[in-house]
Image (cartoon, rainbow, N blue to C red; front, side):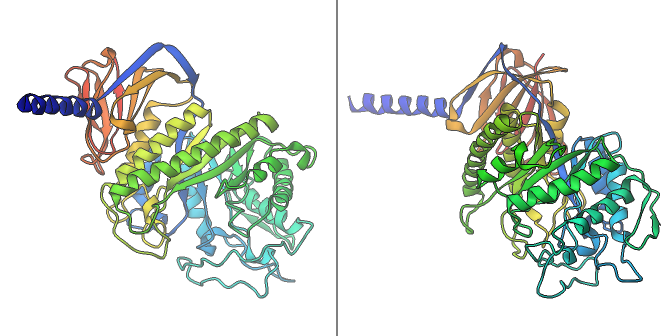
Length: 490
């Protein structure tokens, strides 16, 4: 009897182990749940490592061009004032201080690499002298010198906003009209006639200058009113919030009654970064913390979408910074080699969930980071110039999925939520997106349609290489830790 009990216990444990260790995917290919509007893309932030002369400059823009993405967001940003601000000093009685030396070259590289695709341009940093400060804000003479305290002041020194709009009119004209006339009546020729389909107004105003929504809305209206005169076809993106803690920001901005007559509400944007729950976490804990943060964010997206649909249903939504921040820029530390796959899997998961929610743009952050510049959000290896797993996940998604796809009723049995799956009908045919959110390999039984299918997969073995291409023998696949796979069904 004792031996029989032991044997039964072993069999029961084996059965339970098999049930929990294997996933089975079921897809009803005739049950369309929704149609996708979502585009996968990225942002590029200006910094010394993307500049001409950087050892990874060529590879960076080669990777950007080969990606071929729409809605690429380019942001010259305040830690490097000489690379972000075109007029660092206020005009004097007989002289102005416009200087595009460090702005033009990267802008040119971005526009060349994205030719034929839409871009979202955001010269987010306003000149410090536009703000009321106790004393003039100092910045490094070295254009590559860091200045984290450049954004000082919370009130514009010119309440009429003529200085603010004058700055952006001239900056915009430099890149779209071939030049501009400065404050003293002198014409500055650029020779640039770029088409800018989307212009984003400021970046993270809830952090940078701590701008309340009422002031931000007035700034947005003032800037958009003037730039629309120069480029009626350009669409304008508002908010660009770092956090989505306060729904009042969305309630106020998305209410047409709070804007001047004639100011269009065309697009909003906001951001998400997952983080470790505590500093000493390892990758074994990251896998839970990152997705916990992601789930919390997605709940907020649902709420924000309800506000948008109620107040301004015509507005386009871009979530154009999606990533993970492990530590502050000043903190140094090793990054686990499997982290890049985990962060890539998290982006794939958020992209899929945003697709289900009808969000228009899911932008991964960012193409290049490196020590002192948020290395954990980089999609390029700053040491050798190779795209890392985060880039390859984005490219895999972008090349397989997009607006017009049909999402099908998909169910998963087994493995306690480690695997996410979605059946999708694309222009190329039936596909299945698979995401392993865990650091263990998981066998997955696919529908019969996936028998002998071709699979493209990024995982901890592909590393900085393109997705591995294999052909299934049967309809079972083993998803390696933090894998993102696309199954092409016959």
